[in-house]
Image (cartoon, rainbow, N blue to C red):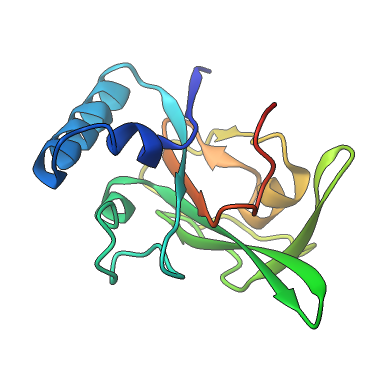
Length: 163
């Protein structure tokens, strides 16, 4: 099993001169990942409230390229911090579609949905790759499929950045 992480890919892509060049590089990256049979975990900042294929976000088309998309949100309600995680897309699999609350504790992400899901039949491999986050793996029916491209998006401050 080989995995690779691209943290804050949107920041790297902003270094490129124009949208056409950014899109071209994303397509090249996608082809490289497929050629090397890598499972990719990609983070990108969601802007303007939503990161989805229906918005005018510069990288919204990435939703069509990835096999799994997870949105992290952080809002303050009546002075109380609330973080939620929502699986937006998980190609070829059943998943919990609603927001699941979580907290960032001493051992990482804690909380989420306790529902056990039965994975749907799929044409891809049934072998799972664990994310290392038990609740996320539970929401995804046992982890990511081997060879899947996974996009995790969120707003600034949703998850901690490494020191």
